[in-house]
Length: 316
Image (cartoon, rainbow, N blue to C red):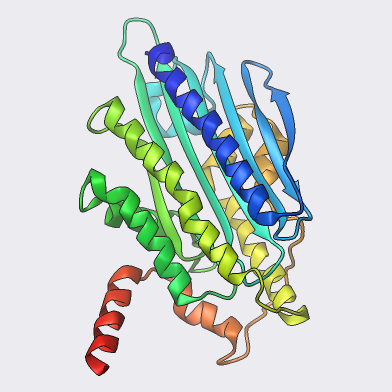
């Protein structure tokens, strides 16, 4: 199975990396991606692509990796003891974008496939991935657009799929030590192997293919919004939360480091500049306070938008 079903996943993921980089470089219009190929001691490697100091993106990366080996790291076998003694392949594309303009949200996504095998036993495999949005100065219509695209990607696979993976995203990207979500969520799924390989692979592709339609319209709408020192300082402060999540809670970061992945590529997701200020709180009723009050907790964005639309229609 590793060869017959791993290869089409690799082909899709490498093509996805190409398409993401091309579209993001086009929307930036000034900077392009530089590629850094690497090899992993023990098996595998990848190609990291990074964009820096562009017209839109202060820093971004789109990484492809395929790592394999004869033994899994402790972070994997501790949670899944049935994987002990199995060889493994892990392949995926991950991306993160840190824009210059504080009114353009940071965004992150990844899609991945994992398979572990040993002689005389059935392979253990699953898909995972998703994408999430981290605005600093959120706009309700942008958040609704983001979630509509996410819902539309899920709908062909069942009416309950979006709600399930939307809730999982809210739970996963939650900073328990801060009692707040990292952003406004999106989709998150893992351990997906229900319904057979082909159905799961189709879902992975639907999620990967929907990122650009979800994100680029928001970038285009907000890239020209004026900003100054106040907005920049708040952006850098909130980026600190992004760093905290990746280093404290993110399972992918831990797996990558423990499995001997390339540290430079794993930590590509970090913003180029971030600030921490002791016991800082936003001014009451300020735009910064709006983020904390209305956006850093789970909400049913699409139902709220539908109710708002009904109310506006009734008032006409």
